[in-house]
Length: 304
Image (cartoon, rainbow, N blue to C red; front, top):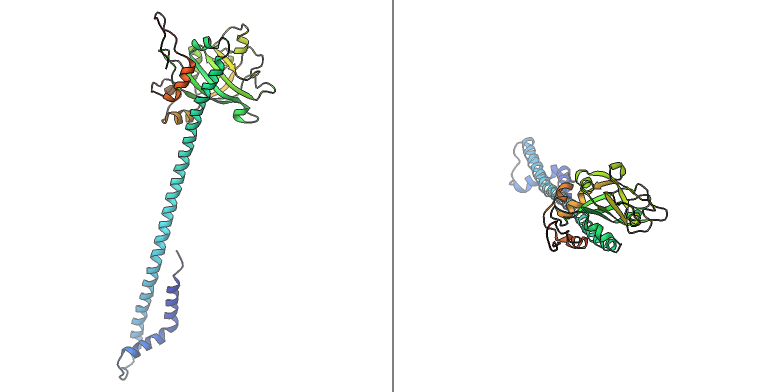
């Protein structure tokens, strides 16, 4: 509670110090100049004392209530401001995640353009069931001492068209980063349903021989290696070294990025199978190529 108003203290002191004289002065000026009645000052003094003390109490209350009200109002405004600040911080974080997701999709377009310059890559993408693109993989993505990155999964739908982006994070390579290589873009071309199902059915998994998948180094494949379940491409010379097969560990569904991109809660399976229109990914679908012509039909199938 706040301290009494100075006016209240002054009034109270006046009452305490001058009570006797105040009473007699009042009586002198108010009562007629007649001989004083028989002494009955005890009762009169008590009545006056209670009246003055009551007035002092009312005065103190009059000053105290606005102060208390002002304190309550200030506390309410502070609480409201804190709530608005927290809500604003949450909105800012959601906006940053959405912007990051959109940037990953945009960066993936540039990676596919680079991939397409490789001999044999266009044909490989033409028969792919899915592709997982990590625009920035390695220490550049996670900092010194770490390896990994955030990637965009695109899965071909039953009609042959490419679906919507879904976001996954990756851990390290089974062979590790090669000496002197900081990292760069990588892409995993998924050649069969078994490879796609790794993304569909698990939230944390590896793409490696230990997981029952053969992941072939595209650079070695160009020299005559047999294709496996997954073909790994790197935009940085020497990222996979001279290994014939590689592995990607600790692949995890990035729910926060996916939900920020679509603006609603989604599981990995819901996002992969999503049929909703998503114009932001049109450029990525286009660069990945039109769906293949269904067997037994003529003409070209239209891409999105």
